[in-house]
Length: 146
Image (tube, rainbow, N blue to C red; front, side):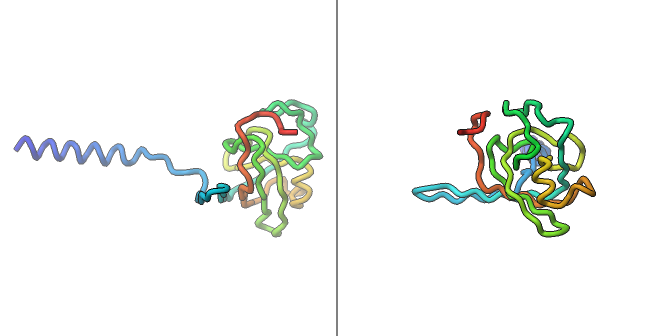
């Protein structure tokens, strides 16, 4: 009888810990070859933009924010990652470089510079549903490589 109790206890513990696994933020696939690695990461959600109030301030990677550059803030992607952002309402796309952290409002996945927001034609509504596709993961260094 004690062996059955041990098995049941182990089974219950396994079930409990199995529920603690975090789900990934991105859908990702990694293909390795002898010469390079290619990453495919896609995320969909709401984008917003930031402009005047933050223009000229320091970003999280140490750069000075310029609202006229094609940059963006993302909560987890490495700095200097390049992503393609597609406005799912009109199909317009833009390529931006991640140089800041954010957005910090619920249900938003990326904060775009004013220039990027204009390219996506999202200035009027202020937010829009987008798809983010990682083109190139950035290095671990904070500053923009020259």
